[in-house]
Length: 100
Image (cartoon, rainbow, N blue to C red; front, side):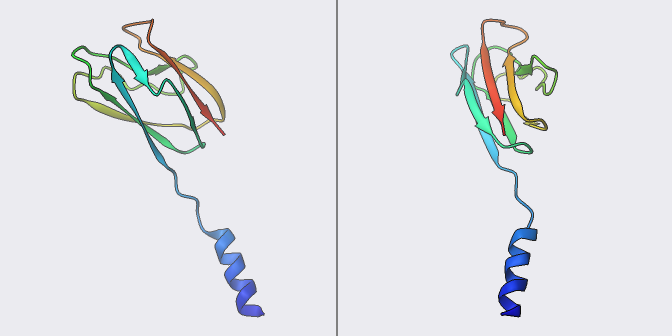
């Protein structure tokens, strides 16, 4: 009985591991354009277009900086809620990260 209680407490005490998600930039679009993640997860943005792009959150919560062709950048999602983002160079490129 005591062993079961200790094991149950350890299971709840184990840290949750953050997940990594991927968004590809191709054809002047983010794919996927809408992504749901957990707070603490990371997103890797990879530019597969022949021109430079960014993934910049409108609320300032993340920014990949300029990504040349073939380059990637990881951002960590630190707050809950919807985080609309766009390419700061090409304003028609838009997406949303929703974190819970």
